[in-house]
Image (cartoon, rainbow, N blue to C red):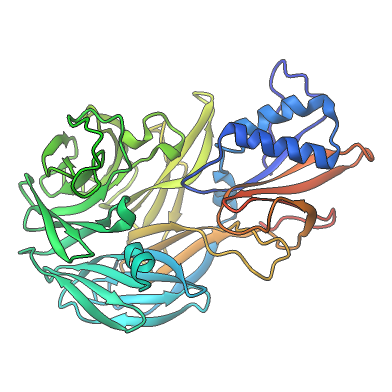
Amino acid sequence: MITFEKEKGAPIQQELILLYLLYVTYDNQPEEEEIQIIIQYWVRILNIRLGWINDFDKLVAKYASKFFIFETFRSSSKLLKTFTGHASTVRSLDYSTFNSGQYICSGSEDKTVRVWNVESNKQILSFNGHSDYVFCVKFSQYHHHNHRRNVICSSSWDNTIRFWDIKDNQQFQIFNEHTDSVNGIEFSPFNGGRYLCSGSDDKTICLWDVETYKSLRTFNGHNSWIWCVDISPLQSNNNHGDKSNSIGVIGGNGYTICSGSEDKTIRLWDIETANQLIVIKGHEDTVKSVKYGSNELGISGGANTILSGSEDYSVRLWDTRSGQQIQVFSEHKDTVYAVEYSPFIVNNNEIGINSNVICSVSADNTIRFWDIRSNKDDLHVIHGNEKEDFGIFCLKFLQLKKNRKSNCNWSYDINLCYGSQKGHIHILGYKMNKKTRTSKQSFSNFEGFAHFTFLISMPTTQNKSFVTLCLSYTQKGIQICEYPSDVELDE
């Protein structure tokens, strides 16, 4: 249980206990004004005492939109599922929903791309066309939305990028212009994911059009193998030259690519011109993973940060405008293979504000969580199974689909999926009790991912008792659920 003390000087006339903040997605968090509108409606229909509405507004506006409980995950998460089938290291994972199902795809050093049904816990497909290690896999949202095809894109050390149709169970396209192993790949956040960038051991980055299946750009500058790539969110305040309002040739003005290499550098590139913008130095060995931040992280200049993991055992945070290191995290004992900005936020007592949590996985067989604003010891460590894992190489945060049989149809599961050296795939997470009853007052039927969902206890005007409510705000509307007094939350 999480409780907040009364702020000094705040005339709170009734005790307010914030019990749980369950879920905040990565993007489209509600603005403070939207939260206040919701609260005003909520207060009105529940006849809550007017004496503390203003304080209530302040508290929820402060905590509900920006605070996503890491403590709950740390204290209550457990192993939910394990997928077995790969005969060697799982290098990459991705997640998607289609045809009313939930699926994970994986790429492995056993040269296969596999598809798993999350609900049944079973493998449903295995693509065997690659002749060497599969390094990275991604579901293609562009094919899904524009061609009604469920497609996986994979990169391999056989020098190719291949596209697989899940329905037809076969490869239907191949990119083979790289002259050496293809490592990281990433779809564009603009134009519906129409463009794909890839990094290769041939020391180049290529940008591809997946509609025409043509190579559009080649980025040259690294002095050794390129292990990882990422494409930025829109950086309207970038300091790298082109201030044109034009959308550019491919609609990519304002976007950049970052890449990590065996040459120990991270480099930024203009996606429209292929010009190198900045070289970031500081790692002492190969850069294995890079991830852009975003403004939705709730930190100032979030879109101008890059997170990186390296063979020097460190995780580092960089400012893309200056190229300077912001933080270094050094608790891992072996190569850091993947880094990620998590959906979690913690309260940083030293600076008095909320702080984002980042996550990293390593060949030392650990998953570590860090406060992005502090380079002190990690917040939490999850140890892989020595016999089943023996090193962790990839991770993916995901939210499993809501239980449609629940009377209160909202999503609340926070899950971490990771792949290991021994070929196992695991999902960690936690759940709340589903036994809720739905309030008659709701803006619409609850559908879609929740921007935020939380429970709160408050007094009512009808009597002196407290009522525990769940408020869920989504793209489709708002729903309020009342928890029966005899129902407790599961750990």
